[in-house]
Length: 549
Image 1 (cartoon, rainbow, N blue to C red):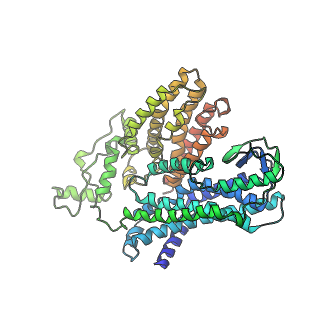
Image 2: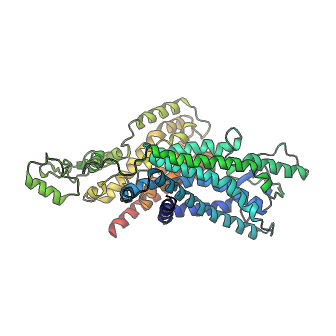
Image 3: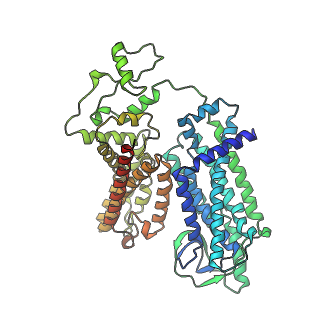
């Protein structure tokens, strides 16, 4: 059993490390290491100690990069860790595994170990970056491998083990496999990981032990410690007035973080194996041939919306009640993809003047498929925005309203769950028109949640802020379309957008795509121009992909 689990985990890790999402998150991890411990005079920080800055000892560099890696990978890493069970089901690998003696528990354990290998490879790269930064900075030439690596083993790795277990669980629980799961995890990340700094919840980042150790060093050096505050998060501050020499956590101070780490590791294993309650090992009842194709076809609403042809009835070779006309059945089976029967008597010509509208309506139906209560949420957000008075250029409901369409936007630019719908749409004219229809379909939900906050801003005399809100409503769907086109899946957008949103609500001026920080935010025209550039890049990428088929 152990050998099978190890082989499955290693094979899965090798496959995933070739994906673009892995490279994006790895590069982001290395960049974060340089931000957490900058070599030059950068004003960006990941670990803040009021107006002080630590000397680059092995312990300090290891701690700040480990904390940054814990915060970053617990969010961005979750996006690339999950989805592997769904890929096995779509690629057919799952059915091959179902024919082996590997049990459900063994399969989920293999996926959990694969996630650990994924995170472990990134932590090794981050630790190497920390060592290089210490040597380049030159504050301390003494390399203490124990103090450098201990924060990774005590803090970051146990937390990421819990993330790996949750990724396996989310892959097995119906309803959490798609964009909704990404939104749920983002909220949980805000509450548990970032909230761990406040001391009001579980100390997932080991902040209590770290801050107590630094306070002792400051007090021993004669510095007042009453007003010293600590925080973890990407911020920019020029008020560094002094430095302190902190050796880092030693083995004698590891008892607290080690106990939390052991608890997290146990929770991680239990969470991953809990998915066995829903996972059926790919050997459940088989779907009838044509069922998935019919579902994909129905989600489009009407294939006549694209002016190419009308929808026929899905056929099942095992169904004794087949088409009455053998000739028509033969023509359908030879002319269309498997699972579709095209009745020539039902083919419709495009209605003049409605092709664009019907294409937009069809794409919008695809986005909101399975989200029956989505528009009810829009209504609730609109009422809340109407009741809240803007505070200067900021409308309190707007940033949270822009999270609500995230599950819809993550479907843009790809048809990962659309069955054979791409093959059907490939017969339609004007791929550019369909691409534009998909972009407009993503803009509709954005305008639906941003309209009332923008009107409230206009009523409060904040015309620039209202324009910024509308420009942001154009930017996010364009970003989603490009991310989906690049990777042919939802994970990249589900990783990038929460980070962009987090930077925006923390008033990082360069990331304020909604203009909530007023004059410090990018100009609305610049945001709209960036949205247009992203949309053009996505459409061009789709055109290139079709041209080289």
